[in-house]
Length: 604
Image 1: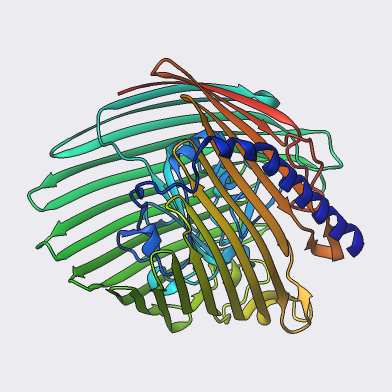
Image 2: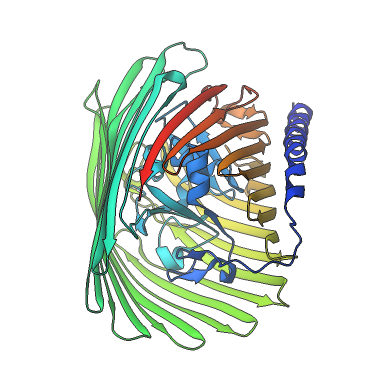
């Protein structure tokens, strides 16, 4: 079996390389090694909680741009993330089905997901509902790889995914209609404007699909519908800017239970945030975010439900000097979680408070980040997390990075009070180290090598001896990632190869549901005003529950954008170009060869 899985990955990788070579002649149209003016660097906010150029980050950060999002025609955020290096997805079927994300070998509840900097991981179950987040509303996605609890608190063991929604910088409007396989249909409308005193915008996205059978042993289609609303507005008063943001996704998802009975459930995910930002001077800035989030699921064939709500206050004071940027702040959260399933349930309230301090120092070729956070949690007491990071530019082309970090995940309400719950659980603790090397042979090219290790203690697992969750496991994760990024005038490429080993340190058994080998490629080629896109994922085998091994696979998507005049665009997508039969969760189907189209009209 192992030989077969290895052969499948080699075959998958060969297919990916063949596709890259097939399109690579297009590179000849551009002088990719020419000495051209350097482009303005991308500005990111997630790596340090402050705005910095991407190339100044002291840890690995990936950015999915608006251009990539639009061309991908992805149905949800999970479909965007699956082609990113170091990310494994487990999906229980088609549109709207439960989806888990594994970042750099960590557990699915070890990735913190934010929308505009606001945590949306629920207080129950742990993982954010990525399958319900519509890419139409997104300006970009920032993926920070590695421990970040010192900056963001619980859950940020494997990394942080910050989904940043769009803002208005001028008057605009957009409308689109789409459809495709599985009787999928979509409609989108947005409108916004901006002036000296503020901006506003509204976006509404409707998405509906009849779906396909989620179970491999069933022929019953399972559908999905989602209505997403995104609102934003801001006003500026002298030196103070007040912003209000609201995102919500509501709808229903059909699925099959363990006995393959057709069921459905209603969901509602919301995040509302009020931000007040004041510039006391050119060097002193205050930012306060008050946010309220909910994550609710209600079964329609029973009384079962899961409800989670969170009220949070996040205040940060930032001082910017010649060589230092010092940020300090307070974080307070009040969380309610309730559930009822199989005749039992819970309704619990949890509070948590934190204080944090960080210093970014840069001097000539040196950059550092020092951060510490003290969290006082109602159930397990105090926890201290920290990050120590250093980057050195040997010259304009070579940069080395090194970092150490301590992170944690607090047991959620389901861990403590759900089925097999244990109120005495301790937090899961991570100790991480990273070493990176970046080489920029030309203005448009970046080569990178990242080495990482992550030791996670007190992992929470179900103990069959006591029929209860306990802190009985330990994970050892070791990995290497090789990447190449090229961004030219009419051609962009992002490619990576990842090799990692994620094991239970107590018995050397592989951790479930994540691949040890993967390769990804994302290519965008401009053909005049039009675009052609190719995305490739070659994934190795993975272990699953019950000693099942899922074989490796290659997934290829082809996308295109045809521009009619200045206002009309037709986006096209072919999913699973070679019609591969593969699984990311044992017994569940994945999308076969299928096609989608969307016509968009935009005015500015």
